[in-house]
Image 1 (cartoon, one colour):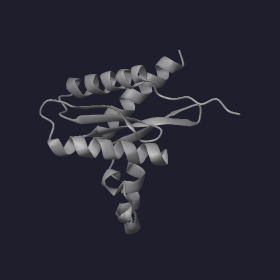
Image 2 (cartoon, helix red, strand yellow; image 1 turned 90 degrees about the vertical axis):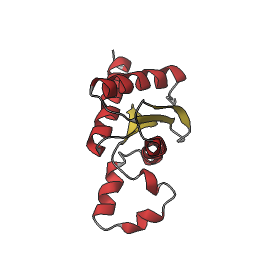
Image 3 (tube, helix red, strand yellow; image 1 turned 180 degrees about the horizontal axis):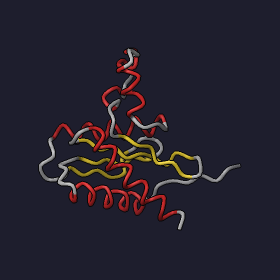
Image 4 (cartoon, one colour; image 1 turned 120 degrees about the vertical axis):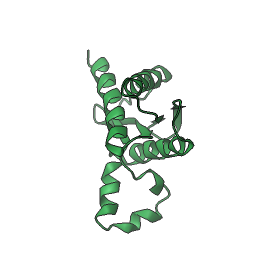
Length: 139
């Protein structure tokens, strides 16, 4: 039998706080979603000024990353390279850069999805929060 790690509400709140701080410091108007390893929503915020569409997209990006264990950018690149069959997948709306899986000890704990600014900036916000979270776990 193997032990399994999982995100607690306190973990999700830490990740959200760090992502939100980073977004506010950079004047990014975004929505942020944190899901568990089953892609179930743990926490979501739409910051002031973020478009309503961003709240939908951030959740889909998080789900895509959680289910696959890969950054959502991986699928965006497949689509750009002509693998259009992925558009028929239920999570196709999340196949845009900005979703990042949260991996700890080779286990998928969940993911963060961000939407509202340029895709690379969405991913930057998510990665920043994940890096701080993992640093906290390893200290």
